[in-house]
Structures are given as structure tokens and as C-alpha cells.
Image (tube, rainbow, N blue to C red):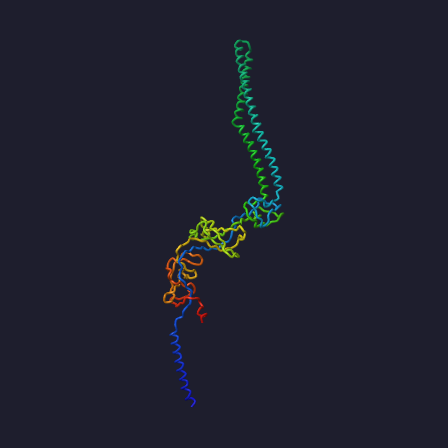
Length: 420
């Protein structure tokens, strides 16, 4: 009796389950498609200026790592770190008493060489020349006298008034007088053409040598006095008085930080669009507002290592608020397009192959992908060169991962939950 009553109950339950499954399947088939809430807006049309972003490090306008040319202990420092200095100012003095003594010795030798030069050029040479002229005059007079004696004795000899020996003596004396005259004349000629100039050159050479040694000694003394070649502020002074400063090792570093340079590296195509004086902004860590600057230099050649162009941005630092060596982010204002179709950068989708596209909302409320070609951007908006005419509704948020033909509703994501 129990078994007979159990079978109908089981059959009813089964029929109810089948009916329930059929009803569930029908409910699933008839469920409306899901609607995705996105943010969207129409493209703007107006002026857009290119903003070229790059990272850089602030560098001083000028820098001098001053190294001594001699190795010597430091006698005195006249500056500390942070001291403001002017070009040519004395910063430190090294021990130089030995060098000063050597310079004094060379100065004495130079003074003696000057006196010797004056004596040789202003006294000795003129005296030698005058003496040579006198010797020539005397030899000439003696030659003339001996010539007259020979002529007189020759006449007397012909008359038989003197012996032949007297005549021969007069002829011999005439020959000696001729030799003396020729010797004096040659000496005078050599003084005029060679000896005088040689003596002057010799004296000049000795003077120049003494002067060179003296100036070299003075230079050694001057090397012990450390001057700054630029105006600025002392940023490094590693030694203390009494410690030895070595040749080639920086003793004091001076930086001109009245203006700072942000040196960025850009591709050649981007750099060609820039000009000297173009505006820029530099974001400095810890500073609320970006600092304005200008393009100060565009390198005329590519960097051989990176094949990029180095561009310098100059910012004013008269107040000393910014520090050299600070990493910064820069944005250079490049070319401007006056009447451009603009969309937010966040609306752009980038495929694996680098192609660009956006999602637009069709009239039937579905999403549709449109390929676009972009132009310049200002960091927030970008120019659309091809693909949009400005009348479309472009999805700005929520387009990532959205399938073609998906039903969308323009609003703020999560707004449905808030309404419920």
C-alpha cells in the first residue's frame, strides 16, 4: 500500500522539475543584453600647443673645479662652503716661501742682465766702433806719410844723395803701413756688418733668458694663490688649512647657480620643431607650481651614443630656491595648431602594433571602434588628424576592453548602483 502511493508522488515531482527547468531556460533566453555605463564627450575644436615632456637633472650655469698647479700645504682659506664669490677673488693661499725666494733670486739675475745689456749696447759697442774708426784714420795717415817718404827717397836715390839701403827701408815701412791700414779697415767693416749686431743679439739673448727665468719663478709664486675664474657660490672645499693640496685634485668648487639648466635629450624629429626662446615649464620636487623656463640651446649635432639632440632649458634661480643636481620633469611648448579636433589622451586606445583608435557611441547606443591618426598633444588633450570630424561622441572612460557593438549608456560608472 505504501509503495503504490509513492510512485505518483515521484512522478509529480519530476514533472514539476521539468516545468521549472523549461521556465528557467525561457527566462535566460529572454534576458535583455547588459548595458555598460561609460563617460563620453564630443571632441573639442580649438587651439592646441605641443608639449614635449622629458626628464632631466638641474645643472649650474657655469662650474669651476679649481685645482692647484703645484703641490703644497694650504696656508690659508678665505672662503667656506656656501660663500658667494666674484670672478678673480682670492680663495686660498698655499705655502710659497721657497718659491718666493727663488723668484727673488731670478729677479736679481734679471736686473743684472738688464744692466749688462745696457752696457753692451749703449757703451761697449759704440766705443769699439769709435776706436775702430780711429785706428783706420791713424793707419791711413801713416800710410800716406810712408808713401811720401818713399817718393822723396826715390828722388834722392836717383840724384845719388842717399844710399840704396835707406830707400829700401822706406819701402819696407810703406808695406807695413799698408798692412796696418788694411787690417784696421777690415776690423771696422766687420764691426759695422757683423760684430755689432752679434754683440747686441748676444746681450738680448742673455737678457731674455734672465727675464724668462724670472717670470717662470713669479708664475710659480702666483700658482700658490688660488683665484676663482667665475662668480658664484662655493659648493665644495674638501681640505682644511695645513693639509696638502695635490696637483690636478680639485681644491675648491665654485658654481654659478644664478640660473640653472635642465639638459634634456630629444629625438631629432622633435628637436627640429623647436626654436631658441621657446617656452617651457620645469616641475621641481617640493615646489607646488611648475617653474617657467626657456629653450637656451639646441645642440647643432647628434649625441654619438644615443643619436639624440641635447636641448638646454634655462630657469632663473636668482633667489637660490632650486639646487643643482635635482631631478626634474620638463615640458617644452612646441608648435601650435590653431583649429584642431581635440580629444582627451585617456580616450586613445593603443594596439600591440602601435596603431591608435577610439571608441565612439553610435546613435543606437552601441560602441564602435574607430581608427585615428594623432598629431600633437599638450599632455592632457591630443590632436586628431584623421578618423574624427568632431561630431562623434567619444568614450573617454570605460573604453578599455569594451567589445564592438556593446550597449553603452553615457554617465558615470557606478551610477546605476547609486540610483537603486
